[in-house]
Amino acid sequence: MNGMRRRRGTAVVAAGAGLTLLLAACSGGGDEGGGDAEGTANETDCSAYEEYGDLSGKTVSVYTSIVDPESEEQINSYQPFVDCTGVEIDYEGSREFEAQLPVRLTAGNPPDIAYVPQPGFLKSLVADFPDQVVPAPQSVIDNATEFYTEEWVNYGTVDGTLYATPLGANVKSFVWYSPLAFEDAGYEIPTTWDELMDLSQQIVDDGGVPWCAGIESGDATGWPATDWLEDVVLRTAGADVYDQWVNHEIPFNDPQIVEALGTVGEILKNDEYVNGGLGNVQSIATAAWNESANGIPDGTCWLHRAANFYQANWDESLEVAEDGDVYAFYLPGVSEDDKPLLGAGEFVTAFSDRPEVEAFQAFLSSPEWANSKASVTAQGWFSANNGLDPELIKSPIDKLAFELLTSDEYTFRFDGSDQMPGAVGTGSFWTEMTAWVANDKSDEDVLSAIEASWPTS
Image (cartoon, rainbow, N blue to C red; front, side, top):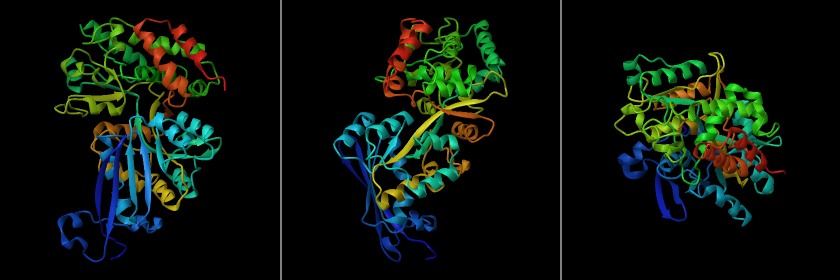
């Protein structure tokens, strides 16, 4: 059969604390399935998977925060690996992932693979459970070196050892707008920060409210405001200072960070500039993040800073395209040549070194998986893997994000709060930025309070 094996995939669903799905490959000889349409449709070219060997009868457990509806696409992306190796993937998605993973490790019940969404969380896992987090095997190191930039490899590295490789990625340095409204008003996309501010003022002069924003997100309220500050630190202070700030090599309330927060305030604390269709400055704290840009299509606001994945929140009737109802442009730097880029993603971390686990971890770091995932995903996903075929990315804004992420013109940095200790990154940083808009707490007091919360060890 020229390196071809035919298998038919099935899915079994069971209820639990999260959603657990089991993918099983059914092998056979000849034209198994009796020539049925499903068996023919699921034929897979297994030549790229021969290196993993026959894993029939083996099971790999995966634990992640990726739940419905995105979990279905995630599971479907494993199908070629399942088809060609015979392995079973036991997938569990949980909204309590970050709280429960350390509990499972403490109890001695780790998953084989976990998708860790923050480098800071990865560092804490390695520090707290050094005997359970497994360093990446050579096959994974080779893939990481070949298919990812040094920056992305470093984000999965702790004390010089590679533990985790990137899974998905996103770009946060975007401003959503309406191309149709811009054309009607004669507005042009700004290419520098000053042009962005000039555009904001022009919208005010024309009788509009330029910006809409919301940082309410349940228990995670405040996180969208941290993205604002991180993006602006990259622009006003630069990538080197950003790294020093994130790693606490300079205080959280360093004067350069105070300046950056003041720059954010020129938009988010400006009564003329916010909060289109939602209220005053204080309304930013209570406006739901996933609904806060709803005013763009109807003209009650014009601009909304959010990542490429915000597209999932638009009404299905809206076309997301460069000449469509809504789209996004790059959040400009100080000059046209200054092109910092803020983003994030998840990392594949192993807690077992069994051969089938290593094989699956290697698959997830390969172009084969990236292309499989892109093929089954409608929008909101791409990878930093340089072997990803951009033609497989279906969403225009995801294609743009991938282009920026893989361009040498842009300087990428990972989300700062995701790299900080949990007490800060998902704690005081969120709550203090909320107080900054809700209570008009001063720039200096907000940053000093976060600095005081930084763990001493």
